[in-house]
Picture 1: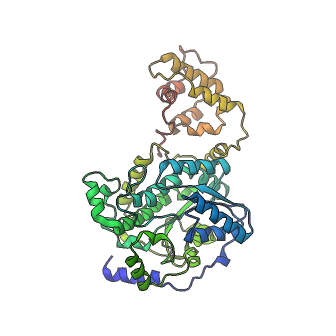
Picture 2: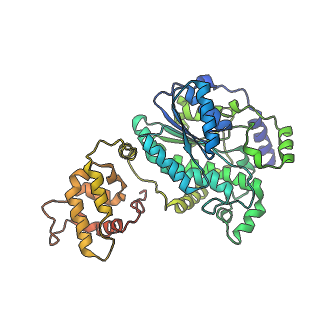
Picture 3: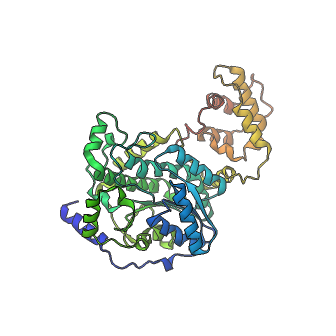
Length: 443
């Protein structure tokens, strides 16, 4: 993008025409479940207020419990509603992200809209996330990616219901000012010489890089899951009065506010409300939106599938120990979410069966234990085949079972069932307590 083109883009998006979509255009959201990260302040808080007033069941996720509780109380008092709940979420910690996702799964069977709204700008350069990532990239890209991945089954359950679950990824016009190429790979999880490179980029470029990452992640998710009815969009909310620049030096904050006429928070929420709630939003998969509620265009290299694909693979590698995107059908996702939330109506004996599997001897060389796994599974097949835990098995095992279920009359080891023979190593791995989803790759 040339300097002239960048200037035009900056003017157009900093001084946009009056919005044609307003809060009054948000439809009735009764029956919808909505999660807003960073919902305790600024644009996120305004988003929470509007969707709450329009009937949604809303979860506000933020890092500070004190600030979160205060925001929840204020919004409940303001709206007179009751369906607003607080979740603890620190996007710079995998453990916190996992706990947040698990808590939501215990409470809900679906998620209709996820607003990945929370973000961080210009923290002290020496700060890293709990897992050692650059704090800005870790909080703005890696964390939201992992949260979205963990909540994917709930999104699939919503898509199975009405083929319209949405994830709104908040980026920034700042992505256009970022470095080229758009990702400096050695800066993401620094170590020598990466740490020197990261520090030389400075807080502003690290922020711009993270917002480019947000767009590319949204684009990859849109390509991979749009056909399932999970709509992913990214956007620039506008130049808004918020706490985002709180880490900037005072002189930088003053000069920025003098140069740009900052808009009220209510306007900042308009574009993401349009993306997440409007009927038109269903048709915006993979789009980049600009103020106010318009379809725009991100920098050209954000559309480079080689770069975004590499980022996707990197993120998959970084988060594989926590979760893997599962290739469930929408119907499977709905059943899985039901079981995860504790709402399953399946046989109460099944959890005991699963516990039995977990307690099998942990010795991959112990052939009797492998035979025991085979026998156990065959005996439990009628119960497990309809149970959502079946879905936690690697997809190739699941498919083999569905095509050729074990024959209860051919259990002796002298006449092993072909499907079970095929699965020896995998079940032995599960008996060893390995992650059940490690081999579950999208085909």
